[in-house]
Structure formats: C-alpha cells, structure tokens
Image (tube, rainbow, N blue to C red):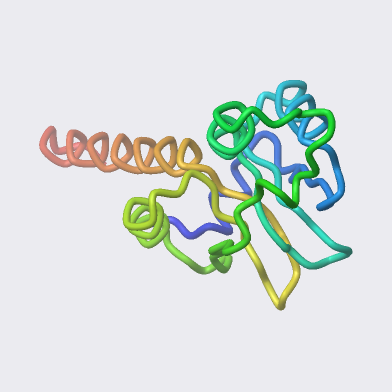
Length: 145
C-alpha cells in the first residue's frame, strides 16, 4: 500500500489551484477549464475554508438560475472539507472518498496544505500497484528472480 506522500511524489503536476471566497464562480470555472481540473480549494490566507467543484457549479448555479459572473464562490462552495495526512494510505483514502462521495482530498501536514489527491490519482496508483504485484507473481511462478 502506498501512502499519500508517495502518490504526491509520483504526480506529474503537484500544483494545487486555489481561489478566495470572493472569487466569482465564472472566474473559478474558467480556471478549472484552463487547468483541466474539477475542483479548487477555497482559501483565506493559509486556511482552507471550502472547496468548489464542477458539481457545485452544476447544482448550485446552473440549476438555480444564478449568474456565474455575479455569484461569489462562498455562496456555492462546500464548507466541510475532509482532508488526509501524507502518511494516509491509498486504501484509507479510497474508503474515505467512497463513504463520503468525494472526488478530491486536500493533504495537510502540520496544519499546512501540501497537496491534493483526486480519485483519479488513487485509481492510477492502485492499478500500478496491482500490476507490480502481478508481475512479481509471474516471475515467481516462472522461477525467475
């Protein structure tokens, strides 16, 4: 089992994109589109105060007829943000995400944001881990070392 620290180390892009609570929803969605991501952490200084996702946009702006260019992120963000530590395992993250229907988990160390893992990051890591185990078993069965 890999830890979140190992997953972050292997990510090609470790940049965590953030906005403030006063950022307009339109600017947040533009940033997500530009970066090809599905969520932004909402920060006040060094503190996470929420997360805004494409799902929030669809359900809390589009379906409610709000104006994206006038609505601040604070009006649609999810404020109860779950996070993990770098020593959390990929299995623990998957369980947390599945149980709480999450797609993104901030990674915190000593009350400081150090990264963000997505469900895609975890799935890729688990597939890689399983492929390695399969290869090792094949070598063992063939008597190779």
